[in-house]
Amino acid sequence: MRKLTVAAFTSLDSVIQGPGGPEEDTRGGFCLGGWIVPYADEVFGQAIDALFAQPFELLLGRRTYDIFAGYWPHQTAPENQFIADVFNRVPKHVATHHADTLEWHNSHGLQGDLVEAIHALKQQPGADLLTQGSGDLVRQLLAAGLVDELRLMIFPLLLGQGKRLFDDNAQPASFTLADSICTPGGALIAHYVRSGEVRTGSFE
Image (tube, rainbow, N blue to C red; front, side, top):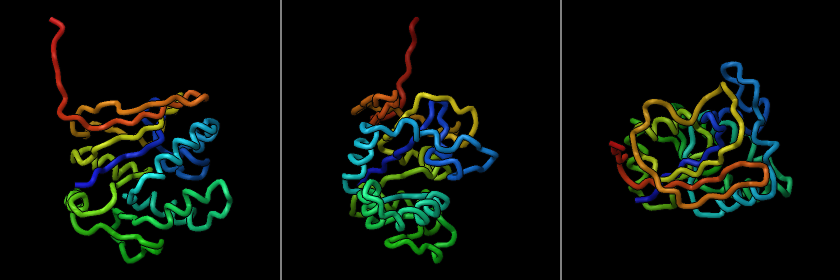
C-alpha cells in the first residue's frame, strides 16, 4: 500500500489559507495572504526542494488544483523551474465533480465516494500520494484516518482568522517525529509518521 502524506504550510494557530500571496485565497474576507513570504530563506527553499525530489503523485482538492493549474504550467523563471517541471509531469488526482474540465497534463478526477476512491487509490501500485493545500480535502482525509505522514512547515505567527488545517472531526491518532529542522527565520519544519492509536494515562 502506498503512503499518503499531507504537506502543509501552517501558522501556530493552524491557519493554512493563502500562504503564498495576497490574492491567492481571500474567501471569508481573509486579508493576510502571503504570510510565508517573509520566511522564504535558503533553508526553507532547500526543504521544499527535498520534499519534491522524492517520487510522488499529487492529491488535490479542486480549488488548489485550479490555482496550481493556472500557475505552474506557465512558470519559466529559473528559480521556479524545478518545481514547475515536477508538478507538470507527475500524475494529479483531483477531488472534483467535473472531471471533464481537468485540462492540466496528467490530471485524473476521483470518481464516486471520495473516501472510498482515495482508499482504493492507496491500494494501487505507484508512487506515494502527496497533498498540497487542499484544506477541505485534507480534513476529510484526517477524519477518515487515511493520512500516514504529516510534513508541516510551522511558521512563528498567529493569524487569528482563516481556513485551518485541523478541525474537531480528525480521527484520533499518534504520530512519531521522524525529523525536524528550524530555519533562520524561526519556521519549524517537522516530519511526523503515524504510529498508532492515542495512548492515555494518569498522573495519579
